[in-house]
Length: 603
Image 1 (cartoon, helix red, strand yellow):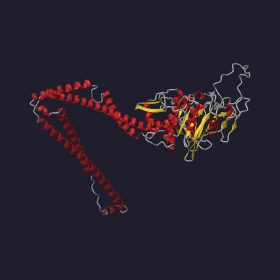
Image 2: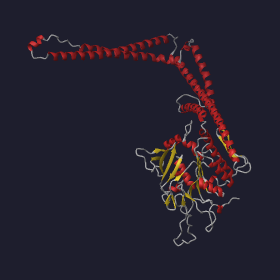
Image 3: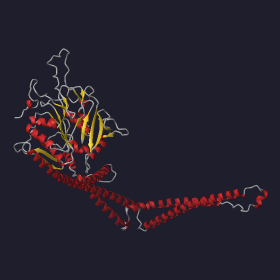
Image 4: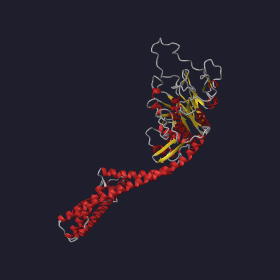
């Protein structure tokens, strides 16, 4: 799980903040109960998305990255899996934010370790968090539960969206994958895609005239009529030629004019190979050498100093060389003999074919040409119609497989609904003293779902429904965390918020990250402060980066009256857990009452 996040640019009253340390269960970024804006609550949650491999912090928090505000900075973070710590940094600098750097415990790059690309980092997190089911990817599983202002995951009516224009179908399939139910859907999807690809290949081939075809049923019908006409013409032509043409195909008709050319070509090749064979035989004769006399006695009489052994070695070398050359010549001759035999075989076959065709009753050349022309047209028409029939068959197959796929998606979504809806109903029962209808996820088709509370479309009710959906997802899947910005609570009544906090705090093995600045009762303020608060932010130097950049500058140096001066920040103390804790910032300046109870708004 995520253990800590830090940055050298995080400041509090002029001092660098210590690492923000997290724990299992609820981790709260707390603002003032007056709902003070622009102190960094949403920005910090956006940084958590950045830590978890997202990039909206770069794309949608551009004011932070202006050099006059914060500029490029490095986020440091630590995970722990199975007792093993992992340290990383990720820069916001252009060209560097697409990599994560493995580090030691001091956040120094590990020697010999290369930066990790974001896709590889996603794979690392998916493996460590156990996302290994069919179709599961890291961001595909977690991104929809990161609900932060300016991210496109806060649509209360379409909570399965990961971006604004995402089709319902993508969100539905992503949910099925998160539940580990994608196996059957995947099989159906692959079968449908294969059929669709084959159908598209036929369409492309027809579009570019790679294969003959017709474009529509009208052309197909015209082809059928023309096929009947051509067949009648062929039959009539055959009758006028004493039925002899019925024995000819268009291919045979063409072969009549081609076969002699093929025979001539093979004969020319045979003649060339026979000439090569004669040349080899002549070469063998010329290379034969007379044997030297093996008796060197007479030679020794004239040249007593001659080395007889040397002469014998030379003679032996000549014999070996001659043997090698003769072997090569024999091999070449054998190859040529085989090629001559093959040529003879082909010539014999062609002559036999010529003889067979010549036995067909004699017809005029004009009749033969007309017959071949009609046969060719007939084949083209039939081929074009067969292609159209195949394309139609593929289209029907694709449609059938699409329907099967859609049914599989709806079937799996029914299983998902059966897990989520009762759990949301159960949790909803705990939020109010009266029985309020729960949010419901309803799949209308593979391409459409609805998420709503029956008979209540109020803003607060919609956000409450989305909160319950995420908690239910975390309880029923491997989803390791949820992130909820303060906007999720802004229209929810206090009683429901406090009981939602109870639901958050029931989580003991996973992590919940929230930003909250709503008034709470004294008991819940204390509960959040003591058990959940990991970061407290307010104006006056205790913003996330220690300053606010949305303030107007004074028009002149003379306008620095006491009325324009910002109040001094509330005193803070360092908690035992290394986190800043609130002291008296919500009380009246002269109040001596308890800083929590003094602001109790409990009814």
